[in-house]
Length: 129
Image (cartoon, rainbow, N blue to C red):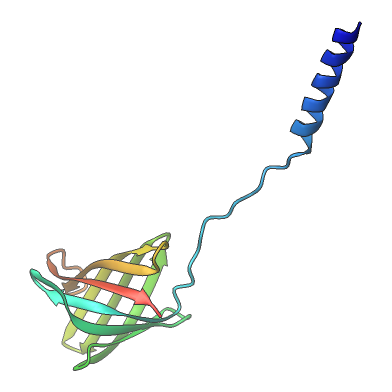
């Protein structure tokens, strides 16, 4: 009789403990990309040797400064895929394609001459300020 009472008590305890825990809905980490980003870029195989700064605006506008040039354009972020199209003048259009890294608040990727160009012109990395 004591062993049955112990068995029933044990089952009741396990059911109580198992039923009272609610699963936590853990949301994935996010980073608001809007704001200033600073970093480096390179040309060809000379990656990340020149300084630049991005300013990602909430409406999707994008501005950047290289120290020599100032340009503007548009940007987008889907999941961790960052894209931007910008120009320094009417005749110079470039695009960026990179990946947002949530763990260290960086975007790394490549830049390309032209809007639809697929040949890499150089690499870049920026970190959110």
